[in-house]
Image 1 (cartoon, helix red, strand yellow):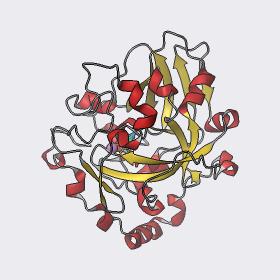
Image 2: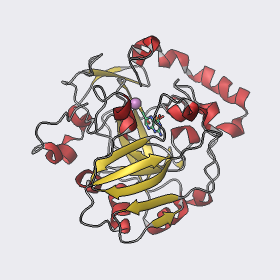
Image 3: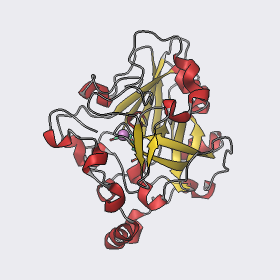
Length: 311
Ligand SMILES: Nc1nc2c(c(=O)[nH]1)N[C@H]1C(S)=C(S)[C@@H](COP(=O)(O)O)O[C@H]1N2
Ligand SMILES: [Mo]
């Protein structure tokens, strides 16, 4: 992500890092060997037997899947540093045990492990596009559950208008969280209508395996029609509230990153165009309104006026 306070960041990262060169396959394999293959593997979850999950054929792609080796090693995870190269640092994340607390405007507070969640809600695999606000994109097979199913399980009260998500906070594990100019922990939010839509997905895995740490293990949100920063990683808390949550990037730079952040090629970021994107394979593609998911989500926004829906 890009902030005004640091000059070197004032460039879309697609111009700063030719990622396909940087993360060419051979280099990756070498990096993996240097690290020791085991440190790159996702921790063996108790629910390992549940992968791969049955594919939901409804969610198909208009482009090839991103190569696993690239998609799992080109990341945004500021808790572990502001570069795209956080695989090694992210291995410090302790994901077992992990508790997701569901609280706020609910009948009863819940504390669930990822295994508890997968025991209650059947897992599935979905192929989704992902569009980062920095104008790079990927397409990956997520494994997990529809967010709407977990919301139903949580039984929120009528007063709840939003779902607020929070990432873990631990400066010993995550050195990025010592950077005091950010307001940790990472927070994101959606409206109840968005949360109940069919698309929001809570991923516990990718490429038919448990999530690698750098991709937000053990459970992260996936909102494929919104800019990638809304897809919050390594969630420890999900709260139902009547107040609109202010997200991490919105708090840092509200002019540039807002609450809605729906993908729209016609609405430029204040510092660069959003018309096109660069896939992790290095191709340039036209960016699609709602990242191509308008059929599923456009109706959510048709009556909203006077708000910045696309930033
Ligand atoms: N907690 C947390 N979640 C996060 C981020 C982050 O820095 N911290 N980065 C976001 C951004 S900007 C993007 S593009 C995606 C990247 O997901 P990936 O690394 O799995 O591709 O995660 C999002 N979720
Ligand atoms: Mo992003």
